[in-house]
Length: 50
Image 1 (cartoon, rainbow, N blue to C red):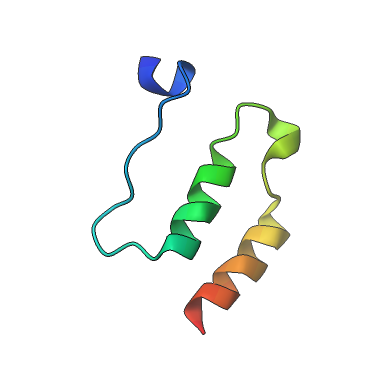
Image 2: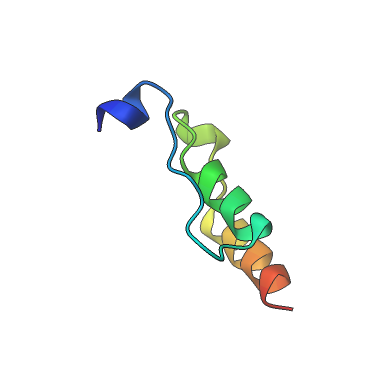
């Protein structure tokens, strides 16, 4: 928890597409207002799956 609190982030999982990792990191924003909503996440995941 301290890693995240201090602004640290996990490395992308093996074979994780960069687009998916970008979504993950956006969801980790400390300010909830800066995090994407579920609708936007679903839209972006749809693009990743194409």
